Image 1 (spheres, helix red, strand yellow):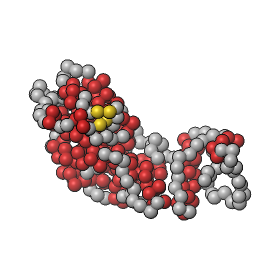
Image 2 (cartoon, helix red, strand yellow):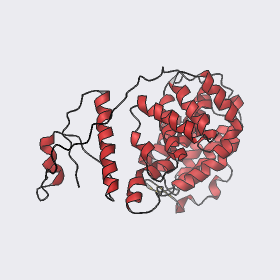
Image 3 (tube, one colour):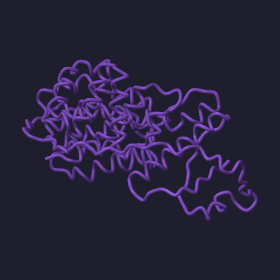
Image 4 (cartoon, one colour):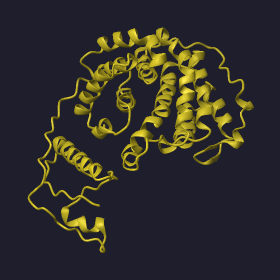
Length: 336
């Protein structure tokens, strides 16, 4: 079934949000009848027949009964605030990659086939004289997390990233890069659950995460305690990333719960501060506060999908954790 709404809508941020709100309202109707939303298109209403095809004409029923247009409130975002990468306490010390060759990489897969090239890429990443950006992009952007998917080789590679961070041998900017990829990796689990939520509800089952993302989440979970021990030695930008990562694992993250709350107060009234407040609520398992913080964020950061917070049969912590992980990456783009 295709639902058509001919608007019109304002050509601005409010109009953009209004279109999304109408789409969510249509999704509610679909759910009431055992259906679920599946994509959508924005085009002139005269093109609607193309979406349905020549053998499925659009039938207008119950004209004049259009539901009220949802009320949209778009608020101004908090001030942006830079996150410092100094002071940096990198040391000239070796990085332990022992056990790398004991993994049967040739039996594992990444986006482009056999993962037998992963050990060499990890060694190149640990080489202070190597091409960091190119190697990191090939390792994760091309292979292990290509287009947001996880593979059988993704989880086994992550402990070696944690070792690189914990060694203290990498400069703060590179440590931050690794935290970002760990955050991207662990969020694939929540992203899959949210993407499957509506269809799962229509089919009478619980949402399922994407393949291998549960293994990836477990791998990060196991490495997190060692990463949290570095809190005091990290500069603000890296602490911000670590706070967001810790918030997704409250059973570990409460170890630095007080520090996250303190950092949230320090950045109060700013965009990083809003995400830190969400992280603090999550790490202290205060779902009501976390949902309120995430709702406020979604109201001013239009890059978030408000539908995430409406997902069926998905825990509040998962929904708002996805908002945190997605938003943290943008907040980290403003480092100095």
